Amino acid sequence: MKNNTLRTVLEWGIVTSLLLSIFFFVKFCFRSREYRTLQPQLQSEMAKYQYNQRVIQSLVNDCMEYRKTNPSIDPVLRSFNIQLPSDATPGKPAGK
Amino acid sequence: MNEGDNKQMNTPEMDDWKERYTDLSRQLAMLRAAVLVASLTLTAYLFVQNRRTGKDVEALRSNVQQIVDGSKKEGELMSALAGKLLEYGQTHPDFQPILNRYGIKAVGAPAPTNRPATPGATLPLPTATPPKK
Image 1 (cartoon, rainbow over the protein chains, first blue to last red):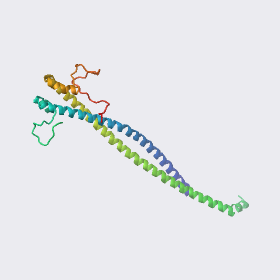
Image 2 (cartoon, each protein chain N blue to C red):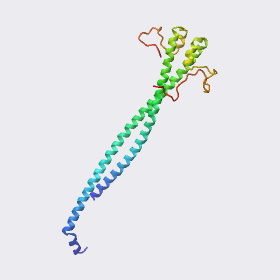
Image 3 (tube, each protein chain N blue to C red):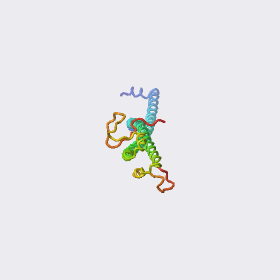
Image 4 (cartoon, one colour):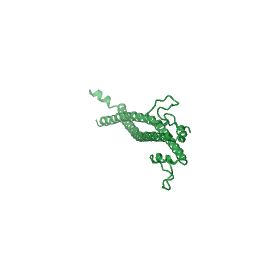
């Protein structure tokens, strides 16, 4: 009788553990797939973001170069909070 | 059962079989216990891996969202800057080369591609092609 109870408990334990293992494994597979999908997306978004930043920086640099000969562009640049060398804030680099 | 059968059941051979049966039962119980321990270990491992992957996915998702939001803001800023610079370029023709370099054109101006016109000034934002390294 005691043997039978122990046997039942052990077998139920094994079945339950097996079912839980299958559940966690399936969940893990789905999450891994999602991770693999998100990773290239992150890289592409990151590249886009960095490219945008480079374009803006380059445009601002060109505008700064232009303002040396034509300071009338200053209000346009200031309206975008672009720090101009003539603005008295030492230590802060010019740019966005 | 009659007396003859009982005598037969108590033979030394039968005792030996009983002993073997008990031994096998014990071995089987130990095997079951070992399988249960192994199975529980596997379950715990998969649970931990599953949780770790879940956390990684959440972190990655939030990163992607942050970058998408940043990109969107950057795009809006670029459009606004392009609009202002275009406005400025209309009164200062010497600024036109800079606008042309970045492809900033007013709506209605002849575009080199067959892209549909969008309101305001446009700046060529990257779509699917990342910058060359």
